[in-house]
Image (cartoon, rainbow, N blue to C red; front, top):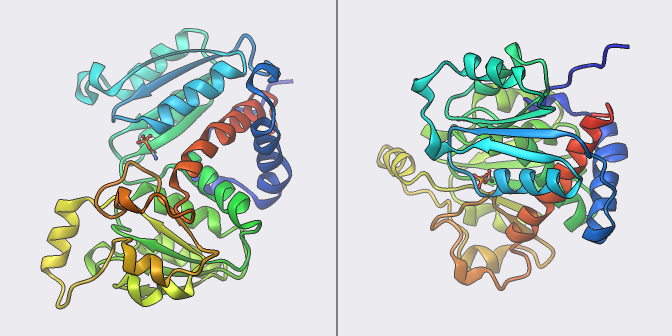
Length: 309
Ligand code: CP
């Protein structure tokens, strides 16, 4: 039988049954297993990473995930190459000539991972493509909601910052449509509002969305604040065109309004939108979120290897 080739490109490809019956239980089991007792489910497998943009969490957690499960990992980092030096498709075709089992790609433009998948005979995993998507970030974000709050249905979430060019919030919004009863506050400058196609996907799935420009107005009503890195020049530019100032930062005032059971997530790396002096507040979950990324990526790789992804 010819195995089905499964690329990981877009958060819309995941289903709720797969999340709840495969990915989350596998990630949880791996998280609860001492490192020296992990099964080498990827023994003999080879992962290659090709990164056109810098990364700490995605690259290192995938590398660690693959290594802990017995795979070998090689790659090319963003500082070692430039996109214009060679066509992406040519690089992928060459990497296919060597016996790799997974290609992990971060590209600097939207659509890069799909272009790679078009010419790849082995699974391509989108590790972030420009302003497009970051599907494995969304998997770890939703896993974190499930771990921290015990459920995802019915949550009230504020997605905060530049919602036009953030691949993390694009993918998270798409993945959240697998759940019911959601109320999303989209907190961004008008110029950086969430793309029409993502908002339409949310509303057609039954989510209630409200666009607001001041996080302080909704902080007391939400279970989760998902704040993204302020691309300062873009946000500053957008703010110059706004009649009145918006608020896209988590500060003491916002935390004072957030319910005691609330959580603050951030995909990291962060900027001034989430000041480190707030980190002692147990509701700030961004480092637990980053830690979860390791187990979610271990689960994803092992499910891909066994044909269950
Ligand atoms: N969240 C995230 O993608 O982080 P990196 O850029 O460090 O991979």
